[in-house]
Length: 108
Image (cartoon, rainbow, N blue to C red; front, top):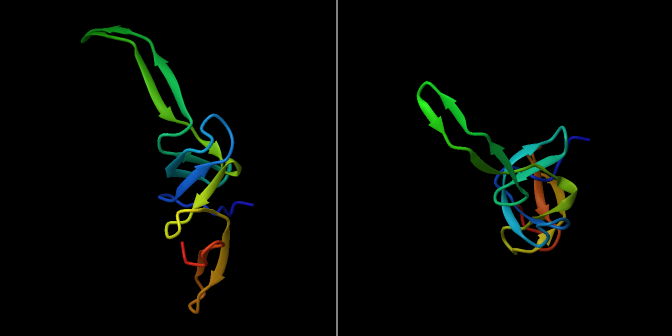
């Protein structure tokens, strides 16, 4: 099942984990692994060693980046009512699929 209710640019809220209750914007969606990268949430760190080269020395660095998290830990926030909601689907007359908020009934 590779169909997710999340798209790039959606606002989501975290249901579980260290960032529970925080909200953020989706910057990347991995449908195959059912994972989502949210801006400013689930921050991980990499440490880069200092290097010595022909151009000189470079100091070590601590690199912070948002790591992917499972989509089951997130819930979509409706842009019109700003409430966490599940997603319903509706088919338009031209055959396109449309996402609908279960709380207010408006298109997402």
